[in-house]
Length: 213
Image 1 (spheres, helix red, strand yellow):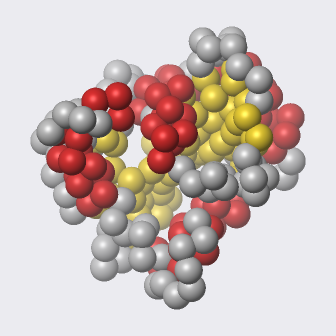
Image 2 (cartoon, rainbow, N blue to C red; image 1 turned 60 degrees about the horizontal axis):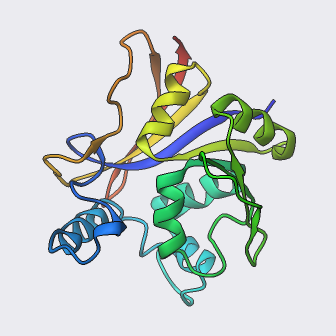
């Protein structure tokens, strides 16, 4: 059976996104602040060859450990699940050929027909909760895994429900000092086991198995 996992970049003080991250307020002076902070925590991704190829940004790029981890995460993913807020941010920022190239299930109260993008990405909008989204994801994942793409609230819901098998963090040497913590509202009873730590010049990659709630 497909594994359910998430793989995200976080700040050193445990935040997934910085304060004020909201495209609805892009005219606010804080927009540039959160944009720069968000860029710092993901800066390890941008120079990688696989990232550049996937987004058609041109040839070249780094091919070391970070690139290998990035490509492995992409290759293992057969379907993604995300929340409405993450989708709305991405809808405004992703290129026409969205970077997933798989089905994506969006948790939302909005009723909307599937949104088909070039390159194999189709967004499906799920109105009846995380269990329904996971059931639909399992039906199309095949032999590949199911990625909980985010945001923090969606990841927390799946963790609390005991539906996550493993997760990976890319911990960037950046302090946000506020924003949205990845592990807010998580019970101490969620058991994790360290599987692997990989240190690169840019970030520390840490992978955990979830052992139950």
